[in-house]
Image 1 (cartoon, rainbow, N blue to C red):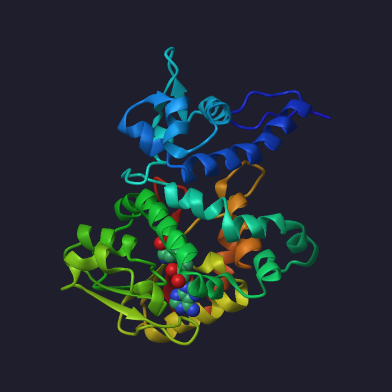
Image 2 (tube, rainbow, N blue to C red):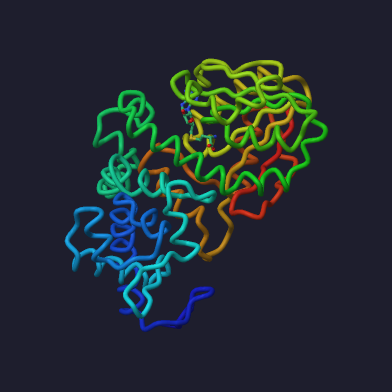
Length: 342
Ligand code: SAH
């Protein structure tokens, strides 16, 4: 068979390429353990050897050293000649208070309900069902409503991702023709806060489940004169009166039937020519590696949603009474998919 080097990676002998893929799982387990222990925060205070890090965290010095050495090999730390570990820029995202922190994302995705559901991937592949629901006997949103500690980590993880992609969305899309923007299932309001800050003419509504919007105080406090916070259920109705409805990483959570219910509720709530703005990834055609193709499987396993191609979005919109008008790329992996109410 012809050898097919993957873009950006040197061609490896096939068995070695497979070993690297197997190691992907080992790397993510180590990443979880190091993050949970707060290793990056300790190194951020001052570089130090594994023995001191083990002392500070109550771990086995040699075992912790081996994990840090392996993680240094994938670019999270560097070990200097005196044996002190330093953070790289990627390693720095493991810190709790880093501006570009991904700590909560690591803790949410690599353990607990996410990890459990992924161990059940074969069930999803066999039946098309949601692995999480099969394992837990409820859907993930019901689980979070009953498990506040894990819900808090998940909500913070969404804020991590928002912080990482907000600026790109704000910079890429021109909000000047919009007066009132409703962010449906906007979590703690991190994206909405970024958009309102950059667009002083704009009024906003943050809408999410009541127990979620209750945690939104900090992000929107300084914008309270221009922003309303409303709790509710988007499958029943969404707040009316906006001329644009924003949903970031929402439609990908749901199958077509559930997505259509949400889209039709937005349609009902908005005026003629109202805009729909989805912030999502688009699955590109062809064989290249794209994060959307991995996130798609996370959706299969966790929520029953999926990542979609441009054509799939256009078809879904048409069924809910919208016309896809354009796809605005951002500097991140997500796009702003714009549609208009017809
Ligand atoms: N848009 C946010 C959050 C995405 S996570 C961001 O990008 O940061 C998905 C969100 O959907 C969660 O905040 C969850 O609470 C919300 N959600 C799930 N079911 C909902 C429902 N029935 N009504 C309103 N929001 C819901």
